Length: 566
Image 1 (cartoon, helix red, strand yellow):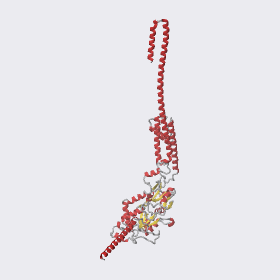
Image 2 (cartoon, helix red, strand yellow):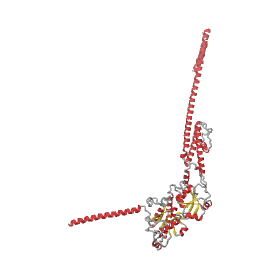
Image 3 (spheres, one colour):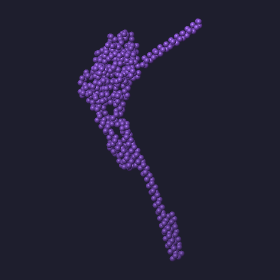
Image 4 (cartoon, one colour):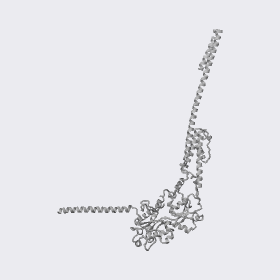
């Protein structure tokens, strides 16, 4: 019985151990899953106060933190360590600004990658200061004239700082807002008011005459001028009568004459068929290319926008009643309205709309902020041709960024502003903010800051004729050049062959003439001998043998002359 009891006990302990082990593993797995979800999952906004509803507040009380700072219990940079801040992000979801500033994904969560400039900066602040925020934040919809009427961004800022610990956006720091109790940590956004226009309007462009053709077409023109000149010089070398001039040892002169055809001055003087064929092709090429250049240059001149060279600041824009686009209900709109009440303003809903309206020609200037233009100037959507530029001087210098309430008594939120101010200064000093702005400024698809990129984008203007447009005439001329070269080589071959045949005939005629002369001399000698023999027989028959020695001497002379002939 005791043994059985011990066995049962041991079995019970084993079962209990494994049950506890399973339970422990389940708890560990659950904690791991929760930790992973907390680490990897994308948080959703958990603070959902209705916009402009002041009956709800999510502000934390930081008076104990402020007391510790003033009592030197904790250093200011670490005063928020371990605290959770309730933040309010201005939500740019489903707008053109989403990829730059802040936006949520399809599930209404913070994006895992490319969450926006605001999230990058807040995460860095949280890491340096030691606070958390992802479990308690709100996404505030943008101002909408249909829903919010004539409310301004200043009113939205005041409500946000009264309802949340930190308002996350690039709010401009103005005296009016400070007077209303808003506290601004160190500004990381250059909110200076500037004017933006389109390049090429009212400014001298030294290379605008190149615009009818792309860089590729200009290079092909240069190559074909050199190629044609050298080919024409080669034809002159092959056949010295190809041209009325003597170009046999003057290749540069041939290239110069070929280049004159592009200016409608044709100086070739062809004599042979191959040279004439090539000259015709080159003149036809010059006619087509010159006509295309002239027509496209006229098109550029006709389609030039109205010049605004006389407008360099807001005073002149007001004087000439120049249409100015700007985002409505913003601090810089309030500035323009207050200081330039007669300005011809066109208020629009978003920054993107202001630049698109400028590109469409419905306004001639955009009044915006320095860093706003910096972020949008590389956008393929609003500045594909890199033709947006600053106009004149900075109208008003100021910065912007995050904001909090200036409260020092009820919630002591001012200590939050001081901590953020310290770390933002550090982030500016070590270049983090500059790098962040540059990274999002280059996220638009291309780079327009450098003059080289600007020139390349201008050279690839959609109205410029490219290689595809002009390639046909170049191919036609190349084919004609090949035909002309083949004709010239064939003519040279036939000429040399004819010369060889003529030389052979002349030699044969000379030999025939020599043989005929020899044959005539032989026949003459034979006739002479026959005549002498006949005379001999007559004489011998009449005179007898005493005359034989004379005729023997004659026979000897005839034989001697025959031997000389043969």
